[in-house]
Amino acid sequence: MCDDACVNCNTRGLQNTPYSTVGICLQCKIGYYVNSQGRCDPCPNLCNTCAAVTGSCFDCTNIKFTLYRNTAQARSLCTDKLCSSACLSCSIEEGMNAIGRPYCKKCSQGNYLTSDFDCRLCPLNCGSCDDNTGLCNQCKPGFSLNIKDGVPMCISDSTVGVCTVPNCATCDA
Image (cartoon, rainbow, N blue to C red; front, side, top):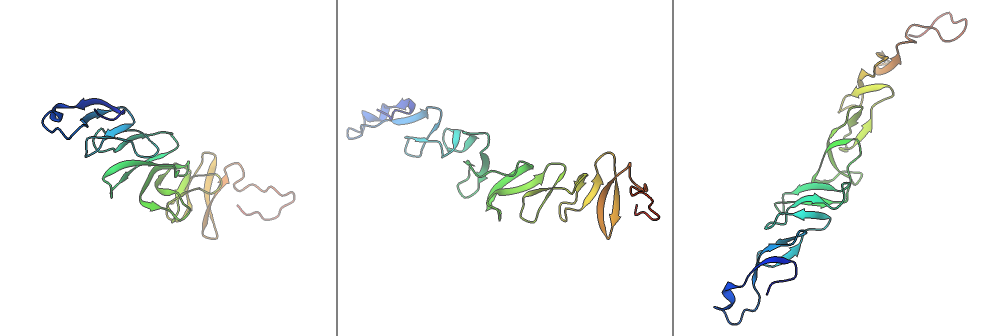
């Protein structure tokens, strides 16, 4: 009396309403949810499993997909739009950033968050850099922060103050 995706069908009301030949589904198979009419609808696109009543996604069909909270539909959905691999916290509630990816909220160490809400690598030998400017504020081990022309750079500890050019009279440290 219910559709094929239903595993628990209520048919009690059918005797009282002779014109009704369809039962009300109370529980659907995994990958489906009960809609407002008591029928089974498939979980939203790219969604592996979802909430039994709302259809809100619990997980995506591929670990590369992004699970996000869709405030307009008041449920979680999945998208195949991927955040940068350096992104630790990703969100597409606001839509997509300028380069067609979900907005990144926080980057992994050694990367910084750009004005486009994407992650970029910090400068060479830099361990961490400022999220707003991308300028280095801490070097990797074995390197020292050196400011040249107002720009912080990481210089190898083994070459600071050492002249590397033969017969050098003056050296820049």
